[in-house]
Image (cartoon, rainbow, N blue to C red):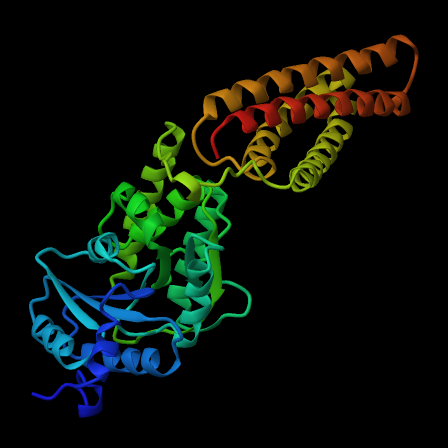
Length: 403
């Protein structure tokens, strides 16, 4: 059976060595995980092969990884590896996209390892922008994003809603900076993958999210590329089941990070999240502080006529302290993992100080015969001191924590 046109078969003569360069330590290894894809595999691999041969500037390899298919996928994959230069085939006895990527990525000799879904839903023109920052060393991980500005996506409302909801949950719980965890189009510098991937527990669809959460948790640079993406109408992915598994995986990762786990020794690849421009931290801190202060002020003014100034200010400061502490941990100091106990302790101490100083301030104004205007001036001074204390205390804690 002929799977590819003759001009795509392994050449002979002087061109043979050049063709084999694709297999010998290429710059980029593009992995295609497959399970029961006998109908789509040939067309997709030939299309990918043609694109890489004609338009890709780096040396490359295509690695087909079969996850225990029960149809003719393995037979077709082997034949493609024999007919097309720069293509290799790997068979696994167990299912799992994560398992396929784990196996291929950690054993690859390429500089950068990548993967694309076999349906090629993601436009291949995004492949070079995806891997170039990794080849140059600028970034550690790169992902295609269907939710980033500039993306063009065609898919049904159900999958769109599930995807956006899931990524919103990730951003809320983990303060992730990436937009799309599950797009089947990603790349990693191989030296990073060899350290990062063994720490990923999941061998299924949550593999992608777990990899990205660990990468951000350890201060790695994640480069995001907007993509053109067309939903595959023949996709056999159980969306509802995958979504449930992803939510369970996210809960597991939240617990893992809360226990202070997930820190990796990445050597020079590791970057401290706090070793950022201090100006960015200061501006973020000021913005969160301004919103928190405004909320406290509104609550104080609403409660004061009924409860009196002392009780009103106590409830106002207490009510906004939890959101304030969470926001500073997530955004001002970019903390997503361990050290929660220390942070809660520091935030609680600052909150108690803020309540005490605010109550003393309004009581002092009351004793001096001042009215609402005096209370507002006194609270402004008390909250300014509290803010300075919060920035110093939480900033020192964050700087002492590993990125």
